[in-house]
Image: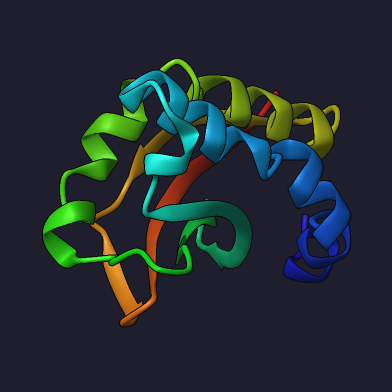
Length: 132
């Protein structure tokens, strides 16, 4: 698959379907017992490809009246990698289905939290692709 293929595959609507906005509320409800306690919304984005890796991003958008501090987001890759509501394993399986026959998602990892701006942080999701 080419990067143009990935760009046309991972449209805004497809990304929203893969990772619905409500998932952040579900995550904070499970974590704190109240979705309103969350400091950010989570959005899935397509970053690009690098060799045999497909790179997605979990964008953390600061919620109004909340603080998206670095100390709040640095430990998230470890939490997200195993939290059942975030469900990275399920997300990667859905991405593999979108890629179609012939391409598999062999492995995945979450990178370190990156600060894009004061109100936007991101966590790279690196998916190693393979052939059937």
